[in-house]
Image (cartoon, rainbow, N blue to C red; front, side, top):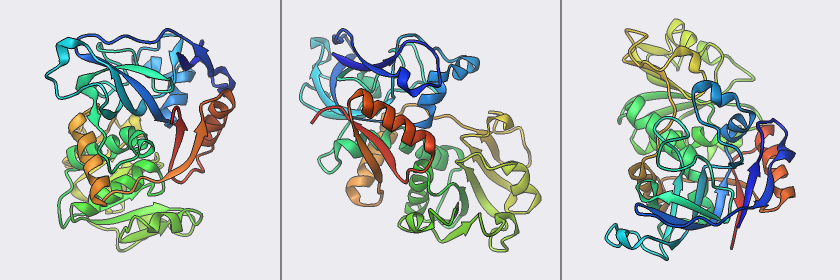
Length: 332
């Protein structure tokens, strides 16, 4: 089968090339999925560079690119006949572990390929009302946003939330999840991205190129602040400016220097960096929201599964200019 792989750690996008590798076989607890679509994320370049090995993450080489995928089950072990999954089911997932990209159940990555062997415990069924592109696009960023909003910030109806990075895919999804829960939401955006962010209906958009959010009188005593872009000195600023109430919650998915102990910054109830974990229940909820029309997942551009397409999707991701997800079309 064809798979997009790199053979060594590098920052050179041309190192990712389509190579022929053996097609995987099913095993008890794992199925083989023919991939229809896969999505790129900034973490892909981090893993390829080798920097994540410093976090203790594994980095086996050759490495098959990508974590987000959608497709159709084409092979299953007879022992899994009563699992609720069967050959022909349309499925999606982020192939991710417990707050890190790897675990003991399967090799990390593997989404940019014609087929993937994946544990049933990581899979969600794709509803009819969700396209393969949307399913692949929402997996990692949607799971991250959902867990940041619900598990870390514990956003509830009537609360006030500030989201740094409303134009990012995690940010746009977080806005929508907060709004669906009945929260008041403010977000930061640039002059270039403000119109794009408006479609997600935040209550306030702060153009950070024109004003300092910490000086905005509306942004005082908020219940939670979610840093999805690596806001400079974000934790210190939300506390010092009174943007966040003394016992509020602060979550960042970028500024890992604040540590991962949520109780390390009292009197805040929660202040920590966060990395997602695979959870099919969260994937199911995201898919249900798309079907219900309460969640939009924008696709900025799709790319062909070719060497040229692989370089182009990496370049587009690195530019940081995309408004929506970048999706690789693996098969029709």
